[in-house]
Image (cartoon, rainbow, N blue to C red; front, side, top):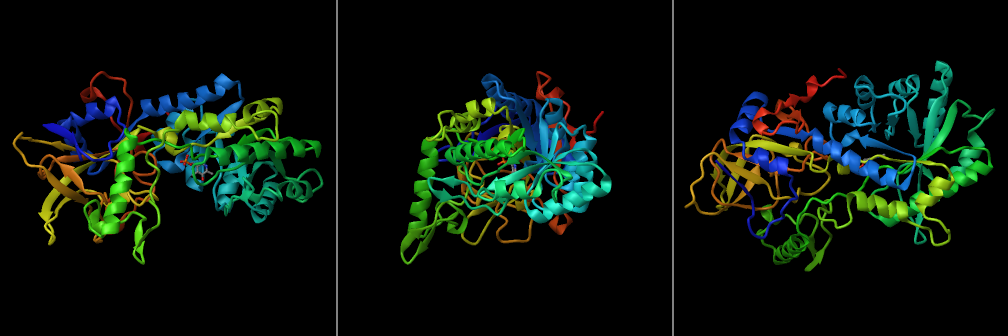
Length: 485
Ligand SMILES: *Cc1c(COP(=O)(O)O)cnc(C)c1O
């Protein structure tokens, strides 16, 4: 038994944790888990998740900010993470009836849950109101619906208003979500409050969640919301929280130079029209138009020097040039609770996806294809490719072997079911039954887009805590067995 990272040279080396390497050394254990639960399996380390929670909490505590962290559970479907978030003292951001119901069943309550769904159905709203869960409002129709359900139930609804369209360097940021920043105050004063149309809605806070990963944009958005809150105060509305959503950048890669080199080599290969880097010369967003290189890399920015806690600090330190205090000091002087809803970044280093090699074959171009017992929907995000080198564990490895370039292929009857678009160099052609491991997949990669085409079973999610010295002794708990007690 021996394991290797793919692409020993010229790859995209992922940041990994000690626990991942311990597991990579346990071929027998992984094989046993695959035999029991099928391939692929998703392993989740709850201890890592808990450490990530602590790191974010510390940022707010050290600044003396009243705060709440909501784990955005859309990034990963597992119950175990919801339970762990609640056990660790943070909340959970829910965005559907089932996400909310399950989070309530796992111990969530009005202090720990928030409902931020893009489309709000009557059953969702009823469930939220009956449990006094704060609802984040997106549009006027929704406000009227919630107000009428609230009236029918005889329970006031606690709400926050989602704001968008912030001005950053005089340019307006477009979003399909929320109320326009210029209309927020008139909307609130015309519709909210006693004797007004939306009198059953109790306005508690403001909310935003921005696309993209600019700390400046988030800093400006937060600053604008604080200004709105203080203007609303003069009109008799008390804003007790501002929720700045998620999107805290994460860094997946160990080496910035590899990231830059990859980008250069990809551009070059698209320009030359060859397929030296990716399957069938897929440009991952780059393309040649009239003999010129066009487009940009359509993937997550996998390398980031400012990420996690640093990213959050930049937003909290941001100061509007026209205001004498930074965001942190303004939040404190206005006595506003700051809230965040991180999904991906809380799942950093928390999960791996493990799959079994089903076959090897050469295609008509003479390329090696390695079929895995998994499909493209089990390693898919909105990114054009998952740009991290995978690991291979050989059941038997002999030193004299020859290097081989491969593409990993999946089980869907689609030509495009190529699990990683990048060509991966391995020290030796895998055998049937060898194991491929994709690391750091817990945020969005595992099952955000997972489908049951061909009636394939959904992958199983196993939860564990690093509470034993050896992986062999660790209990892996199947996620559906996780309950409140
Ligand atoms: C997607 C989303 C999040 C989580 O975003 P991450 O990038 O996973 O941190 C939080 N809040 C809202 C409203 C979202 O839509």
